[in-house]
Amino acid sequence: MSVPSVAPLDASKLRIELTPSPKDLPDPSTLVFGQTFTDHMLTAKWNIQTGWADPVIQPYGPLALDPSSTVLHYAPTLFEGMKAYVDKQGRTRLFRPDLNMARLNRGAARLAFPTLDGETLTELIKELLRVDQRWIPTAEGCSLYIRPTMIGTRASLGVGPSTEVLLFVILSPVAKYYASGAKPVSLLGSTKDVRAWPKGTGSYKFGLNYGACVQPQLEAAQQGYQQVLWLYGDDDEVTEVGMMNFWGAKRGANGVVELFTPPLGDIILPGVTRDSVLALARAHADPSHPFRLAGLPDELVVSERKVTMPELRDAARDGSLLEVFGTGTAAVVTSVERIGYRDEDVVVPVEGGSTGGFGRIAEAFYDVLQAIQYGDAEHEGWSVLV
Ligand SMILES: *Cc1c(COP(=O)(O)O)cnc(C)c1O
Image (cartoon, rainbow, N blue to C red; front, top):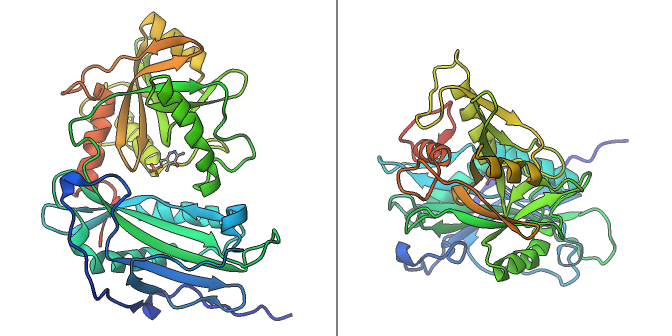
């Protein structure tokens, strides 16, 4: 039996249709996250018989979908979240795009979508960034959010493999997340709703994982908390902070500070920021590595391990809890000041930062990540020029 030869995604086949009516650039101070989009988008269609059609950069606008498209019924859809940054020399940079591409492909395989060459998609995203270059805000701390998405477009109510898929990438200018200064957040530990579960799909950026998180988020807001701390299981295992990875720090009985985050697995999203914080923390903690991060204790233990809410509550009570924070592309780092847990408020210290918006450890990671992302510091080729 001969294997059908299907076309791979090919950046050399890119067609560019420029918009006849470029929009006015928004005032960066009025930007609300994810509500303003640039002039163009990238699209590429895939079909099981022919493979990838030629990718197109075209004017940003509505998609035409058959109402029976599987994405509208059974949610075969995944997304990525990354950013483009302008450095002091005016050059555009991406941060570790290879990790976003690997995560996208891992999700595509799980949804029985075609996988693609990550370098080719990165090339196409770079081309889109060149076309919409004027949209990348240059004010300090601003960036252009990049949203690659894949959806199943087979027109059929039968549940089955996506024989047709649409890949698209849209761009949204975003203001500095902490425009009015960093502020620690309050969390409500969810003992009623679960975000992800063993052998489930919580470790993928699938649309289906997010829609159902809104109602618990509203409930937390009604009770006076800003985000949900997603707990799992009978021992109230800590998993994630809203849409961020979870980090905690405490002083051990021997006086040494431990920085900890839950291990990857089915219930944790493998964040690019999480991976970066881990790598930086481990380099700092390794005496044979030259990297040192000001703000972290000289001696540091870095753990990926199970964390439970009772452990955090007890550490807060006995004074050994130093900090809790979340990490993700949108805000980079967010400190936590309070966690509502089983009718109690666990108060978390936010100390040692330069402004009060961050704890000392959170601030150290925030500062170094921003410096790398904006090209002010170099670290292992993480920042990639467009
Ligand atoms: C995207 C996401 C993160 C953070 O991932 P980054 O790659 O660091 O942006 C964390 N948790 C969830 C649930 C996410 O969707």
